Image 1 (cartoon, rainbow, N blue to C red):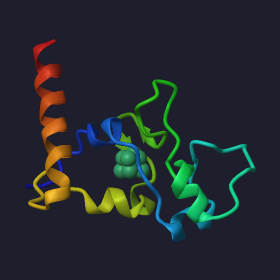
Image 2 (cartoon, protein in one colour):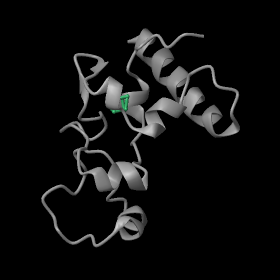
Image 3 (cartoon, rainbow, N blue to C red):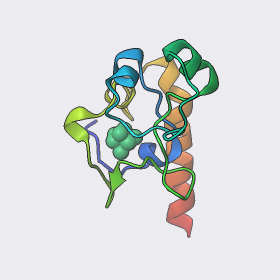
Image 4 (cartoon, rainbow, N blue to C red):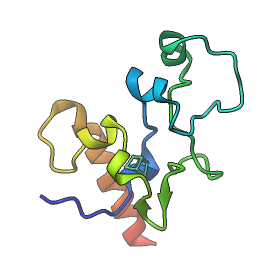
Length: 107
Ligand code: SF4
């Protein structure tokens, strides 16, 4: 299945940066503005390697008008996930997306 670019995964899941992405300093993070994290290990432990969300508290800051505004430079976590993946770690996420779409269709 080709990605339909519905953007639901960008609303439902927080994105963890890997060490290289975190150290690049090019992504907006949940704790931007706070200088208390010393290294990636600590960042991962307290969730400081998560991409910032919009004011709604759930949508990725980079989702603009339903599209990823940094698509060519999106994090590895975003590249690894596909709605038709057979990977075990994707199953729960896929079910959540389906539930979200079903609920949205009913309203
Ligand atoms: S970085 Fe792009 S692909 Fe990844 S969650 Fe945010 S908007 Fe979606």
